[in-house]
Length: 471
Image (cartoon, rainbow, N blue to C red; front, top):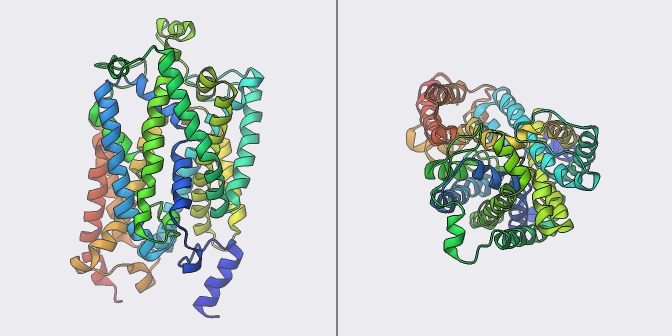
């Protein structure tokens, strides 16, 4: 059997998602598909958590508003000039692309870690939707310090939501994009309305009133660290580090007609990671004035951050619907990506069933509120772990030939384990993680140095390692 026939058979089994071959020209999509997907993914349920969490860090007005503006710009530029550029040139999934560089055995380890982390992230989004579904049932909401499920009602709601979201994701990219296109306008409208209502409830009548909501900042809540401009700037840049500089969205942009479609990420980022974060922070500012929140603070505890009640208190039933939909549209593509990671490990398995597996893991993770309540810390760690592997792809593409090494080395030499990749990641990750822990440095501060270090070490180690193998 020829290589083409083998890959064609795998493609038939995999359900037509082109996991191990280039996406054909006939399947490429225009900017509308991506705009809808990114708007839906980033104007999402987690924004109802992240906005309030910024308030718990005692951030100032300048640090929040300007830090988010510039940090999100860097994220968009990363998507446009790195991820979209490489994704539209080769049109491979992240996992197949990486296999050509790292070898099958090494990339299997990465795929497993990547898939599990994606599942945990999707689990946080299921948690967010559950806080909205639970309102009619008078469900006890998880507290900022909760880690375990707090009721049978919570467990049942999370399991039902997880099953529905997993089935949508398992239908493939077209279904994911279609769901996002339908739901994203509703979600965006909800965030804008929530922000306007919150401004009214806070008696904000001018820009100076708005600015003074944060003013010079305050002391962080119990258990939180103080955020400065650099915390906000770097965290917002690297909140999606795994997707852009970590190259996970190669799996998405392989369907794009041209690299400029990478600019569509700005639609999602500035609606979701700017307007939505600030709107959610305003909702939480309203809640902090309530007797319940004041009682928490008086007792030395951080008030509850539950997206469903926050939105419901502002815009009623529409808020419940918006939070549920927002969780869906973010969890769907995240579970889809996790399914692709597992698909790369077991390529002959059905895409549908590996995505159901990913959704099941995400649902179990969603039962534990800690993933949502500690989202700022988890997202920083998640990006820090996965982003350096993206540097391998970027440096292999842009600098391999200039450095005198061969790109796609594992494919050309038929090796299954590229030690240059392993040591580049281990050393860069180990050194900078040690620095972060030893000197109590916020992880987002060392994500970029780790990424650059990994790429440079990959080139240096490859020059030595490739001499031992004949192409």
